[in-house]
Image (tube, rainbow, N blue to C red; front, side, top):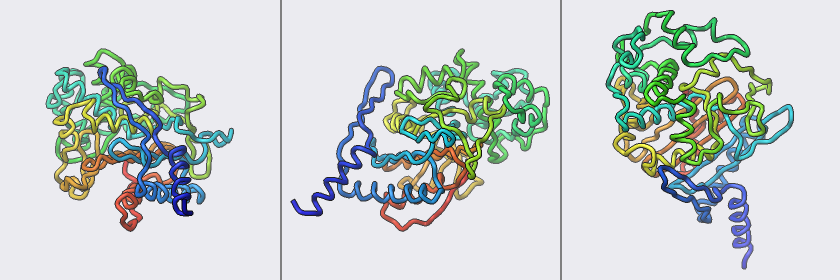
Length: 386
C-alpha cells in the first residue's frame, strides 16, 4: 500500500468519524427512510476537505462561531461544530446544539400553513379577516401574508414601546390585540408589491392555531418535529433557555445579548433547531413526505415579478428562479446574536445549513460552499438578507 493510498484511507476514516451522518431515521405518517453513513468518494473527500479549510479558517480568524452541514441526495458530505455554545462557561458546540433560527422559522411556518391547506382546513386565497373578523385590514389574503405582499405595518415598530421591555414575555394573541387596537395605516395596498414584514408570519402562527385547534408550538411538535425525528427542535416556549444544548447569543465582541418581548412572538422567528434537524426537514421535503410536489411547487413560485434578481414564494426566498438547473430556494435569519442560513438547490438535492450564535456575516457565504461543490472559483459573495 503506497503512501497516497494510506493518506486517503486515513482521511476517509477522519471524515467518517467527524463529518458523516451516522444512522438517522426519518419517520413520517408511519413510514421510515434511513440515511446511511456510506463512505465518501474520492471527489467528495476533496470537497469535504475544502469545506473544512473554509470554515476552520473562518473560525481561526474569529469570523465564524457555529455549526455547518452540507448534504447532497440525502448523503452528508460535511458537518462540523466550531466554537462556543456558551462563552462564559467555555462549553463547546456539538451536533446537538440548538440555535435560534430567526427568520428561517418562516420556512417551517409556511410549510405548516400549506399542510393545513392540503387538508382542506384553510383557503390560502381567502382574506385573513374570514378567520379573524376583527382584523381591520379587509383585503389581506392568506397568500399575501405567505408571500410578503400584504402591505401590513411591522408589529415590531408599531408596538415598539410594548416590545422593547427586558424580561417581558408577549405572546401572539397579546401582540395581535395590541396591533389591532392600534389600527396603524398599512404601508401599501395588498398585493401591490413585495414588502418583507415579520407581521405576516406572526399572523400566520395565529391562523395555524385557529384552524388546527392546537397551539402553534404543539402543532409543529406533533405534525412536524416528532414525526420527522427532529428531536432537538422546538419553539422558545418549549425549551429550557438555560439547557445544556441551548446556545447563548453574542455580538461580535462576545458580549451576551438579552431577550426582549418580541422573542416570544412566534411564527416569524423563535424556533430553535440544529443543523442535523434542518437536514431531516429538507430531506423530508425532497422525498415529498410533508407536502405534495404540487404544493411545494407553489411554495417555490416567484410571486413578486417586480423583483428581478431574487424573489419570494411561500416562506422561501429564491435565486436563479428562472433557471431550473440552478434554482436555489433558501431563507436566512438575523436576530440578536443569531445568524442562520438554510439553502436548498433543488435540481441536485443539495442542502446547506449554517447556524451561528455570534453576530458575523460569514454565516451567509453560501456561494463559497456552492463554488467548492461545483469546483468553481469562489466569488466571495455575501448575502445578508433575512
